[in-house]
Length: 234
Length: 290
Picture (tube, helix red, strand yellow):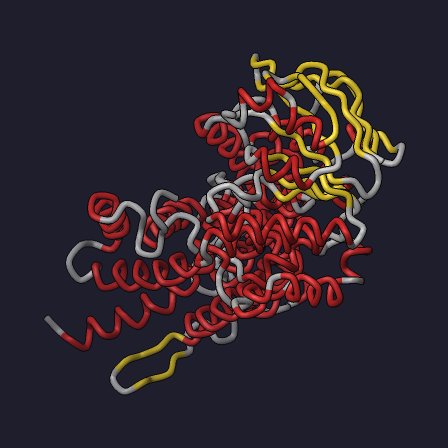
C-alpha cells in the first residue's frame, strides 16, 4: 500500500533522514519507534508532502506521492495526526472537525463520519461549540484524531498520540487506534511509548540517527536484547 | 471649552472612523494571516477611489453604489499581487518584504498617475453638502452614508470569515499554518483569496471616501499611516481591534483638532500609537506574543 524507497531528507545542511525504506501493507498497524531526534516526525512530514525528500521515492497504491502537493496527498487518503496536535485554537471543535473534511469524498461523508467521531469521543460532542484552544490536553488529542478521521483516511499516520497524556488516557487513545484499525484503516504509528505501541502493532521499524536500524514483528522487537536495553531499560 | 463643538467633532470623527476601520480591517487581515505588512495599502485605496470616480464620470453611478465595483476590482488586483509578489516573499526577512511591498506601492501609485493624471479631482454628488441635525449636532449626509456602508462591508467580511468554507480556511491558516497544511488546505489559494479580501476592504473604503475629499494619486499616503497606527492600537492581526481602533482614532483625530491645528492631526494618531507601544505593546485586543 505504502512503499518508501530510500528517501534522504535535509533541514538546510542537516542530514535528517538517510536512505530510509519501509513498507506498509493494507490493514496493518505499523510502529515506527526511536528516540528523540531520530527522524520519526521528519519521516511523517515527508510522507505528507510538507517536507520534500532530496532523493528516493514514496509510492501510495503505486502513485508516486513524493511528487504531489500536501493537499493532493490528503485527498488520496494519506492523513497525518501530527505531533503537538496542530489544531486551530481559535476555531470551535466543530470547525476544527470540518476543516478535516474539505475534499469531495470526505465532504460527502461528512455527516456520517462526524457521527462516528462523536461516538468514539463523546467528549468532543459535549464541547463542540467550545474553542479548541480551551480544551484539555487529552481532549485536544481526541480532536486531532477526530479531525484526521474526518478526512476519511485509508492510511492514518499518528505522531506521538500518547505524548503528555495520563496513563488512563494513553490506554483510551491506544484502544481507539485499535478500533479505527479494525474499521479498516491502515495505521502508521510513531511513538516513544515503545512498549505500548509495539504491543499493539503487527510490525515495527526502529529508527536511529535517521536510518532504519531494525525491523520485525512487534513481538520480535519487544524480545530483542538491544531494544530491551536501549529503549525499555530492562 | 465648548461642549457642543466637542460633540460635533466627535460625531464627525466617529463617522469617518468607520471608514478608517474598514481600511485597517483589510491591513490587519492581511497581516494576521500572512505576516506581511501591505505597504501598498494606501495605493490600493487610491485605486478604489479612481474606480469609483471613473464609473461616476462615465455612467453616473454614485460612489455609494459603485463601492461594490471598487471592492470587486481590488479583490482581483489583490489576488493577482499575492500570486505574483507576496507569495514569493512570505518566508523572507521583514526588511526584504518591505522593499518588495514598497515596490508594489510605487508601481500602483505611478500607474494611477499615468492613467488619471497628477491633478486632484473633486467630484460633486447631489448630496455633497446636505446635512441633518441631531439635536444640536449637525451630521454630514455623505459621512453618514460612508460610515453605514463601511460598517456594512466590514460586517460582510466578518460573515464571510465566520461561515464560508474558504473563510474558515483563512482563519485556520492564520491560526496554524502547519495545521492547515496537515489537513490538506491549499494554502496558496487561501492566501490569495485573503489578500484579495483585504484589498477589497480598502477598495470599498476608497470608493466611500470619494464624496468626502479630493482624489489624487497620493491621497492614500496619510490613510496608510493612520491605518498602521490603528492596527497597532487594536492589536496586530486582530479584526475586532481594527474596527474599534478605527473608531477611536477617528474620534481622537477629530476632537484633537480643538487643541492643535488640523494639519498636524497625525500627531494624535502617532501619539496614541507610541503610548500603546509603551504601555500595551500587544494592542487592545492582541494576544500575548502574537
